[in-house]
Image (tube, rainbow, N blue to C red; front, side, top):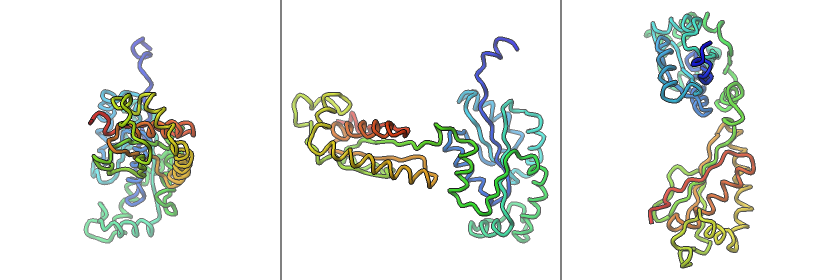
Length: 294
């Protein structure tokens, strides 16, 4: 091996998701995306090498990639087995096949009100039968077969996370967002807390020009009556909800912390809540939406 090759960083994993229509491919793809994969849906197999090359160039070789390939690709789908056998991407590849019994697949497709891509004007069951024939050899090649017949969405995401998650990607990510009520409440917040019950540093001349990220302002805000009591009760509440989120397959929590202008109280409290959540083992960070607007 030459020096240039040995110096290259290791290539990230490639996961190819395929299987029966209605077996949960979209759910698996969404979970892989949440786990940090770069995900491409409905990819013609012939484009696998090109996608990997583009990811290598734009995201780096260590970026993990997942592609969803299925019979929607038409004649292109036939090249999947040969593409995988030849190792054309240069990455360690895992082939995941999602399956379920016909009764469940029919029920799911009818609920989605979508025709089967191989139905060809006939019955939905006819399309499933044709699909099973097309996929038979690929199912035999699969590294991981997941039967979703008796799995709900959360159970399927758990199976994917178990197979492809890392300690880093399966931990809950908490984002605390400071904001000013006069600019509006963040629309995407899961929880909103109001810090206007605390004295406003704006009215302290030596603190007015500073922000909640400055030590003197943070000490002032956290030292006011009621601040410690709020934190001691609110952070355990968030931690309890976080555990429920994880059980339900949610790995992102956005907590909005507001004050009048989003400069002092909300900023200091957002930073402290994020710090305490980190101490509890969560991946947490503080963002400050309105800092600098005044």
